[in-house]
Length: 255
Image (cartoon, rainbow, N blue to C red; front, side):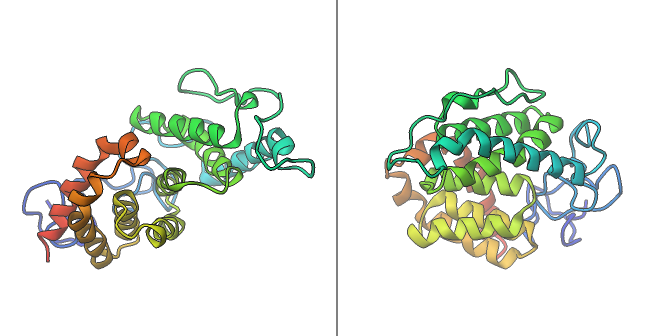
């Protein structure tokens, strides 16, 4: 087996010993292109990588997907206007009553009308991540633009919210934006484990394995002291740490 990113001969394990990319990633089944390491979708045609159901139903391409996302953003802005409009108060109240957003796929649609902007952003983040875990590509492609837009409406975000946004951006292959968001976390907390991992993953997706090794090297150095901190985002996402540690150790072995 050859590494799908750098072409080096694989030496076993889950990650390439030369560049740290995940091994076994297939080519796009729609157009034959090989996306960057860590990609969830093909950056040539928008098809899902390594999962059933390649595109959003009826769309045929990413343009239609993001046009639908723009319409959903408009709906969110209408629903959230009482919070962000000219009569808003200092403390953001729950969003004024409005219609539920109807989405296909995973379970009942979230009723954004009774939520604050941050609650809506968190609900949509969970919906996208649940769809990713279930290989529900239609739901991912439908809900992802709305989830990213909802996080913009929920500004200013705390560290947990910023991590959610970066993970959504990586899911949508907005790798430059994801790296900038991860760096924003690290500017405030240089040893933050989620910020370091997201910066490393964004670097891998952008083909910068040297930067990825540096970020994940910092992750290993900070792990023991950081896990002693009782941070909300660490409690909520601790299940991700073993995979992050495995990737960090694989990249460190390439130095």
